[in-house]
Image (cartoon, rainbow, N blue to C red):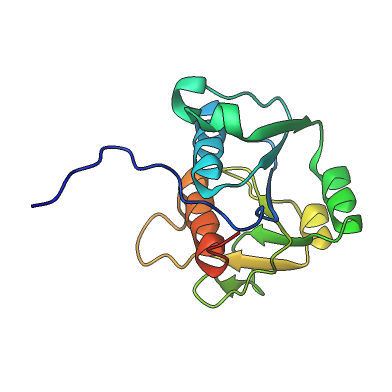
Length: 164
């Protein structure tokens, strides 16, 4: 016999995660809200969102209270600042030189850069990133929903650094 626990307490991290999520302007607050919720579950402390960003607290749930949401107007200055602070800029993007997420080794100090749902990152933004990681797709459509893809990448980072 075992006891079913509806909500287990969060696992303790030995150190703070050095992962920051950086979002280009997204089309819907539902996607950003889902990203904030997942960031909370992963112990990520900061999401930087560009453009006219807002979250739905019902979707973000506890993430809205535990994840710092920093709002910025445009993406390029954010990327330049994070790079100067020693973050490795990793775009979650399909490019001719992207590496499969299955094979990508995240640096501990990573800024995961998320593009717009429809247009991804533009050429100028791509020139600023250090690496591109992509999630393989085996069917249609050609890519995952932005919030789903971000969750997959955050989980992979956490898998590589389970203690923080």
